[in-house]
Image 1 (cartoon, rainbow, N blue to C red):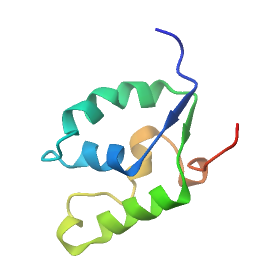
Image 2 (cartoon, rainbow, N blue to C red):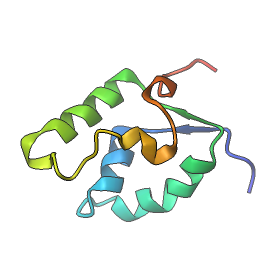
Image 3 (cartoon, one colour):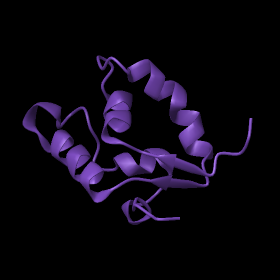
Length: 84
């Protein structure tokens, strides 16, 4: 398999990892090693807002983590869209 240079992190991917009832949970978890091997992870401010809004909702507070970006060993400053 070729080296993965870029991996786009979308809201559905992060929520699919955390929500075992999500229809894409299994696929998201299986893709996790690809994300961890990527040289760079990309996302948008809108995706970060959607993730934050979901995890801040009362019914989800215990399910999510304020340190969800650490799942990938990155800081939120690394999660920026790029034209690269």
